[in-house]
Amino acid sequence: MGKTHQRIDGRLRTFIEEQPIFFTATSPLAADGTVNLSPKGVSGSFVVLDELSVAYLDFAGSNAETIAHLRENGRITLMWCAFQGPPNIVRVHGRGEPVFRDDPRFPELLARFPDVDPTPHGLRAIIVVTADLIRDTCGYAVPFMSYDEDRDLHARRFAREDDASLDAYFTKKEYIATSIDGLPGLPLPLPPTPA
Image 1 (cartoon, one colour):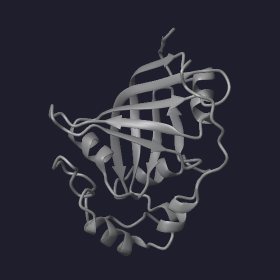
Image 2 (image 1 turned 90 degrees about the vertical axis):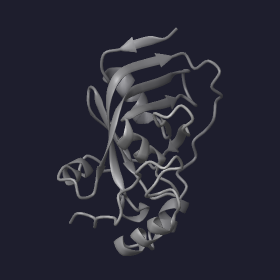
Image 3 (image 1 turned 120 degrees about the vertical axis):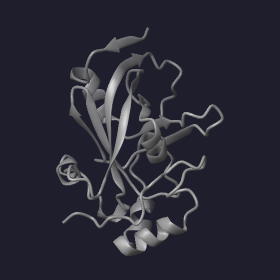
């Protein structure tokens, strides 16, 4: 049923690029640490960088668990499910790294996302993932669901923020600079958006 792939290419690449939503899973090293699972789905905010690397835009939110876990240990799994068409589940298990706004690589990476305007979403970082294991499985039990459109609520909420007010928002949130388990999260103060 399941198959291991050596690279992200061909039908596998097409499949993950066509999905309107994917999920990220991370956890701290501590045995009693909080496992984090997050949906991601703003159109244009995910790209395949090469046959073993992908990236997605990390937008403003009420916590920064993924960033904290990646800063501590780098482990991450991404998952896509076929909710339409033939059944399929793809997982990329790998090592992730948050690339923050003040990183010299940030502008070049951001240019890889031409199909989304990150400005109204409060872009915090770009998460780059290098695959260690790429697998697909049947997905026979995944239900059919239809995709209508992206919600506009996130963009409407964060479009009114500039760098200073976004930094103030993050500073007030309990689990942004520090994770639920006390790990370093998003570095604050937030660096300005590169010009």
